[in-house]
Image (tube, rainbow, N blue to C red):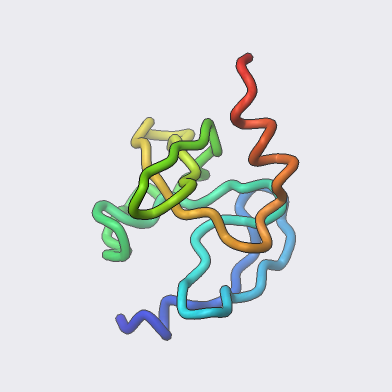
Length: 101
C-alpha cells in the first residue's frame, strides 16, 4: 500500500468523530481531538496487526530527530507505540498527558 493510499480519513475509534486525512506530506494515525489511535501495525506502517483495538494515549516523549511523540498503549494487548504529534492535535490534551498523575 502506498503512503498516499494510507493517508485517508477515518472515524475515531474512541470519540467517534470523523477525522480528515493529514495534509503536508505525512499521514494521520490518531485522532487530533482525543488523541486515541487504533492498533493496526506490528511495525510502523505495515498494517499487519490483527488486534484492531483502541490505542489509548498514555504519555508524551521527545527525541532530537522526531520531536514530540505521543505514547499509545493498546487497550487489548498492551503493546506500546510512539506516534509523531500532528499540527492540529489538541495541545491542551497533549499537555495534560505530560502532567504527573
